[in-house]
Image (cartoon, rainbow, N blue to C red; front, side, top):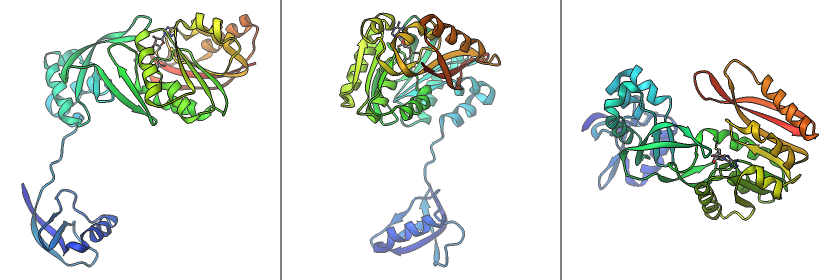
Length: 340
Ligand SMILES: C[S@@+](CC[C@H](N)C(=O)[O-])C[C@H]1O[C@@H](n2cnc3c(N)ncnc32)[C@H](O)[C@@H]1O
């Protein structure tokens, strides 16, 4: 649709320069599209044009695409939309969503609106259960778009292929991966105990070519993608090891690590002995866990100290912080400690 309004008309050769000047001054009317003919360029402007002559002209209106949030609220109301909006993840071009009970019969519409409202999405999957089993894989069903569960995801400059129906993957720890990558020093041996498709290991390996990074993972599908991702990012200093962290560490990585990450928030306590076995004196451990929302980390730290005593080691706590809310009553925290 065309709408009438002020435009600055300039000769074609001056079009780009004028457009940039007007843009810098915040004077371009972004709701209308710039047009040109054989001689002139017509730049839509808001009120005032820094002393330039303006003329009136009809220009085509820009199509403004409504976002998913807006569409969902428009169709189902703010209350109903909340449950979806607060819990959906995007991995590459796949959206993974929770359908609240109230929207159950409209789930296909929710999927359709998501595709309509977010241009980078091609697939919508719905969660049909929580994270299950040792591999922590979410049960998913197809809801809209292409019928696949594989995608490519880019995080902090690293490309990762992942099949979200076969492996654990969450974009929600991306800030933690960035933080830890920033703490790694040149030449460190870094051990990631529950590596998944490799996000921690790959990001550290890419930024620190002199570090040696080993990721241990039990799920064969995850290790397959982890290996593929090492190739994809052309990393020579990262190794994916298939196996149970308990076994692998005692067999190969005793007193090896300068840094250990333990991203297994619902079970890492059971692997404290493994971390102490792998830690060189001076090793920093990044330990993830769930805790009660208002319960603090006191008990967790006692358990860590207890584990250290049993292993004949001492620890010094360096940092603790909330990483993200997990449920109504629990939050995920990280505790960084030094092993002496
Ligand atoms: C919460 S996920 C974290 C994955 C990855 N670090 C990430 O952030 O995407 C935990 C991973 O630990 C793996 N796992 C569970 N038990 C394990 C064990 N005993 N040894 C090695 N990996 C294990 C699971 O298969 C899963 O991929």
